[in-house]
Length: 170
View 1: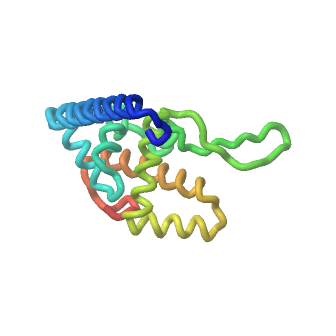
View 2: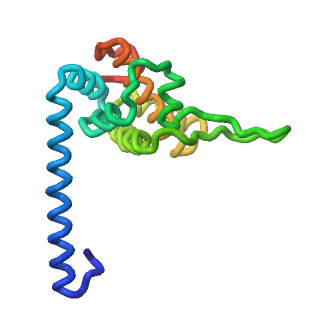
């Protein structure tokens, strides 16, 4: 928009932005209604959102993109969204582990939730501070928080309750 110098083009772009915003709002409302319509989905969404930093959009994305959450081990939950570290050590070469693969849409949603959890959840702030003190880069810290979030969501759905025993403030 800031690059559109011609008035007609700027007005056209503004109409398109308003139209897309309305459509996104409508889709968001439909997703909320679908979750609210099913008691099981509503319960799962509440459990997922019981962790500080996870909101309705991340809960909806998790339910949609990782429907098997609650039936997985913590390693499987992390791996399915591409947050399990894999060593790439061909032959005698040794290096850092990297995360890769997984369900990219769930991964992207968890990234935003990790940023929110880092700001709003004291347990995650402390966890991040400990990792930084050990010399971990910022991206590795965010990835670790993402992994912790998916593991916590999986555990809460497995137990069926929003307890605080998963090492993070709720």
